Structure formats: structure tokens, C-alpha cells
Image (cartoon, rainbow, N blue to C red; front, side, top):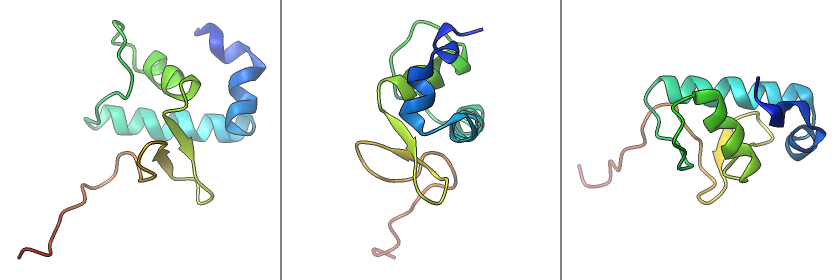
Length: 87
């Protein structure tokens, strides 16, 4: 078990246990589908990666419960976005 999940800091950072669970599940799904980690860890444990992404303020849930990158404000995971303007 990851010790950070036992602390209230991560729960409060996300806005509650339900939101934390949702964020973890959605981000794990994205990582399992091939998304790249947003943190540099020596561990390959995806749960540890997600917890570190949350603690380092790299990801969050928006108001529609979509996982977002903090730096870019766009969804994490899901279908890739293509620039179709040049077609």
C-alpha cells in the first residue's frame, strides 16, 4: 500500500475520497492504455506514478470529472487530438 494514500493531504488536494478514487481509476486506465507518465520515477508501479502525479499537482479532475493536465488544461488519455485544418 502506498503510504501517501493513508494521509489526508492527498484526499484534501483532490477534494474528497470519491474524487480521489475517480482520478486514480481514470489515470490508471490512461497509463494502461499507453499514456506516458508525467513524473520521473524509477518505479514502474503505475499506482505510485499516479499518486506522485497527484501530489506534484500534475493532474486533476475538472468539473465534468475528466482528468486534466495542469500545465496544458487538456484531457489526459482518451483519443488523440488531430489537427485537421491542413487536410
